[in-house]
Length: 289
Ligand code: C2E
Ligand code: MG
Ligand code: MG
Image 1 (cartoon, rainbow, N blue to C red):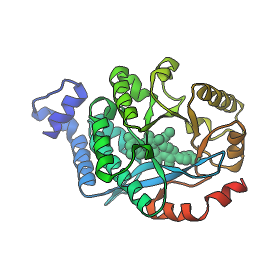
Image 2 (image 1 turned 90 degrees about the vertical axis):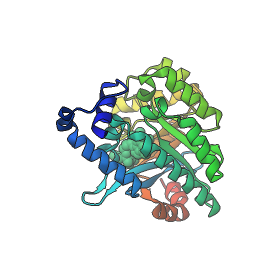
Image 3 (image 1 turned 180 degrees about the horizontal axis):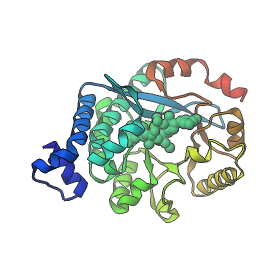
């Protein structure tokens, strides 16, 4: 059944009848797919959280949720090694549901413990087009008794470009629920400003490839400065990711960037370490940056 499903998804035909010839080229896929399925069922996926801090107030009000796979034999597997596969096979929808549910539960539990922290969750193109994401997110918030204002969804531009009409409809329904929306990896895809203008987003994340070498790369600094200005004139908040040192932090702060994220602040952390980080260091550390 999995082999037929993978073939149906790959050919976008909507259905496929199993044929033994399918097995040869889908065998690896099916085995990885069944491992991923087990990963979700047996709680092998784990959430890491990376702080984002406000350049103006130095406060850390939110974190980005980044999934990893704690594989029983292969150790910790980063998302780049299984998310694209999950997107390709359509299994991403199961992962997204799991991530959304656990992230909302985590924010609700932090609130009960007196930690007021919002989360940004990554969603894929497939989530926007095929799954009824808006009602799933709405139901999840209700189930955990959490206000939509604590959630930001990060969507890449290319996710929207796949099927702009359906994707924008999903985004509008999410926005209606009161969820913040962010354009992730800005500047890397086939950027279309016309498309961006139509998206109901409040935030733009400048891709880390423009930020990693900011102090030494004159082209990057021109791109980043003008992107900040353009985003601001469109009424968007700007997040820079991939900030690895104090110099990059200061540059972005000087250019009026709103929010910063990167190893300079902290690497992505498991929940208990993040809690310790939040309670101890952020303000002092940034005050001296
Ligand atoms: P992203 O959403 O653009 O996430 C930022 C990535 O940059 C993360 O990699 C993060 O660890 C890394 N990063 C943060 N600060 C720095 C820095 O200062 N320097 C450098 N070199 N890297 C930094 P990660 O965790 O490996 O995630 C990679 C990508 O996988 C994410 O890119 C996102 O597209 C995807 N992803 C992660 N979790 C999920 C998820 O739950 N669902 C979906 N659909 N995609 C996810
Ligand atoms: Mg992201
Ligand atoms: Mg990004």
